[in-house]
Length: 115
Image (cartoon, rainbow, N blue to C red; front, side, top):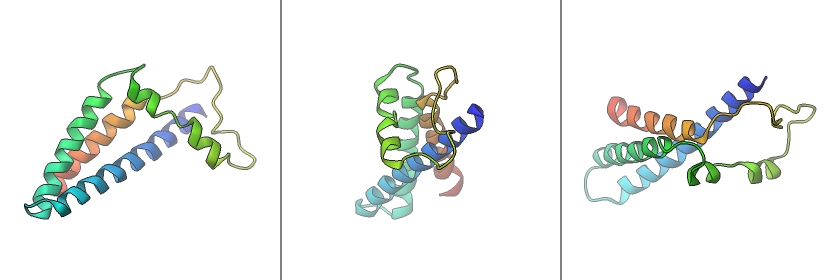
């Protein structure tokens, strides 16, 4: 059960990070002086490389501590009747570096193959 829970958390975190990075890239492309698509591609490439670099830092970094969702879980609450969101000490967890790495890959793929 822990594997499914952690994979779902990974997918949600990557989706949120991708949307935020894409919104920043679109905002920057809208206010820049070149063409929108060119600047969107360039900004997605830069943000993707930065996210890959942040993902390569490893465990115990400031990025990992910043990705702790303990505060957000307090506001969102739990799923009624299920305790799948509650971690137990013996369950392995995925690292936040995986979120940064996969987000970087998604942004690079968007910039290279789509734009």
